[in-house]
Amino acid sequence: MVYTLLERQLRGELAQRAESLPGNNNVLTQRPTTAALFKHFAGIRRVWRESDGVSRPVIEGFTLLHQRILTLLGLNTRISTLSTKILAPPV
Image (cartoon, rainbow, N blue to C red; front, side):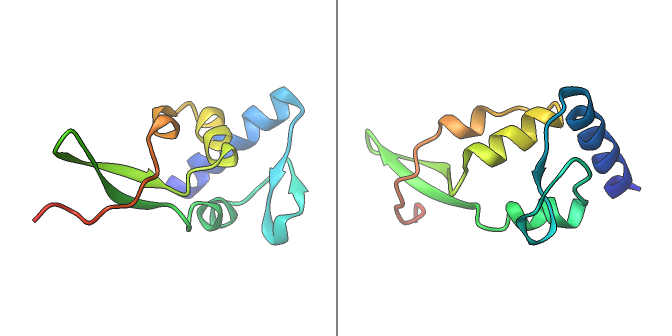
């Protein structure tokens, strides 16, 4: 049921805006599947960044495509402003 809701929201927004996204095999479509969306997010990782002696979790691999998908779904895209410097997690 969650897959269906994701597809409905995303496909509705794409149709309303007359836009498309990469679907299966990266072919542009206005009707991407949830499975194809999950594949696009596969390369994102949570890593740790140290700043002023404090370690914080940040996101690595977040792209403009990810930001666009989150926007189409009506979700927060603040994640895109985080640094991508990789450091070891705090001990």
